[in-house]
Length: 97
Image (cartoon, rainbow, N blue to C red; front, side, top):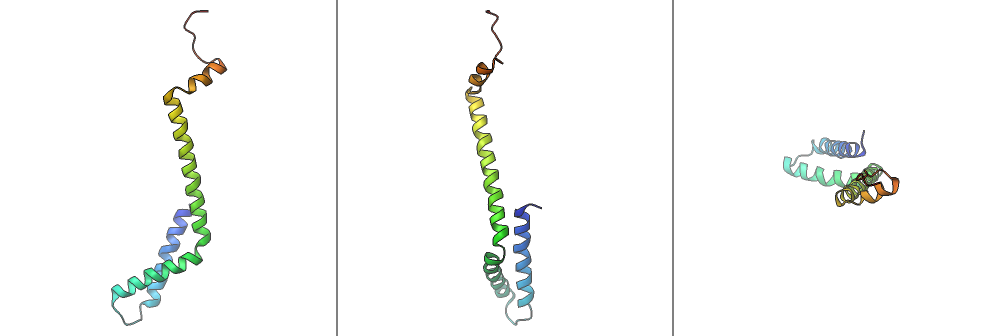
């Protein structure tokens, strides 16, 4: 399971737990939901730190892969890969010796 899914499910789970804890309290439902959102956000800051860091690392690695692929594609489109072909001898000849 990816770290983003774990973190998201953890956040939702904390929200549900806090809503369940506030359910017996006699107050408006919207106030309960707002308080549950605030409390679950604060709790997730401390309780889900490891999953949040893991998710951030996965996102950074994915961004780095995309950046590298983008640079490789740009260089291929610009014709920079022809210099590599010349060095390896893979470039087709034009028939002149």
